[in-house]
Image (tube, rainbow, N blue to C red; front, side, top):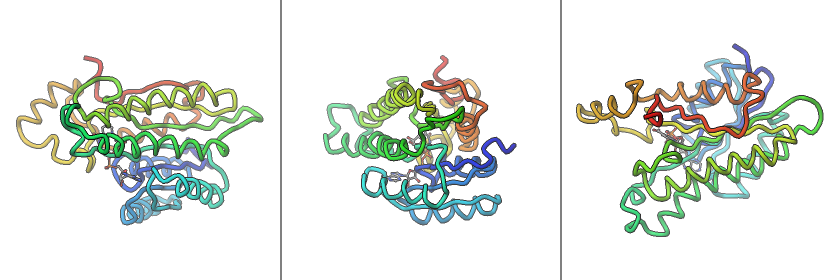
Length: 256
Ligand SMILES: NC(=O)c1ccc[n+]([C@@H]2O[C@H](COP(=O)([O-])OP(=O)(O)OC[C@H]3O[C@@H](n4cnc5c(N)ncnc54)[C@H](O)[C@@H]3O)[C@@H](O)[C@H]2O)c1
């Protein structure tokens, strides 16, 4: 299914979890991929996995909250890949000290989480937009942000985390409205529970599994590949008329 044949896609957070699964999925569908992450080792592993699957990547180790580094990496990706058709922002953190009652969360902690999850999303999109605009012809490019069901419900996942994810969702709509007339689509995915290093151990044990069955109608935590196929749909022309939308990929948890 070569639905992204000839496209070039930039993925932040590509060294692990949903970002890595996305890099692999879009490469399998024919795209070349620029992978950005702060974890250099993980980036190498992702590049090796993509190569094994017959795809091509370039990668850059950086902090997504560092504007000059993001600007340079986006420019280098466009130079190396020759074009840019899609951006996926999956870099994100959950930070221990953020997971407390709001009154106990320090400003520093709150800002640290916002810097990665929200500012990092803004910077990648900001610097990619000049390459994504399609002022001539019917071609459209696509931005896919990764927020969380924490953007949709106050289910207690940290002050900075929740605020950052709500910000990502709202920001995505603005991208869709401002840049829709210039051929850029933008949609936000809100994952529920996904089996990645970020969620490591959260669903281990009998009590956690029973809670999972109660919270997720479909009955299990998602595999990252189940997020990646939704991202690939939103990147491809299969979703040509879909923009400004939020898609919860959560096994039905926000439906109840
Ligand atoms: N796993 C879940 O259950 C879940 C649920 C809802 C939302 N999400 C969101 O999905 C996205 C991906 O998470 P994941 O589960 O794949 O986690 P993950 O930890 O496997 O991957 C996150 C990646 O982001 C990178 N990263 C973190 N800070 C960075 C920085 N400052 N600069 C560059 N890279 C940085 C990490 O190195 C890592 O490779 C995140 O935004 C997360 O909030 C995950």
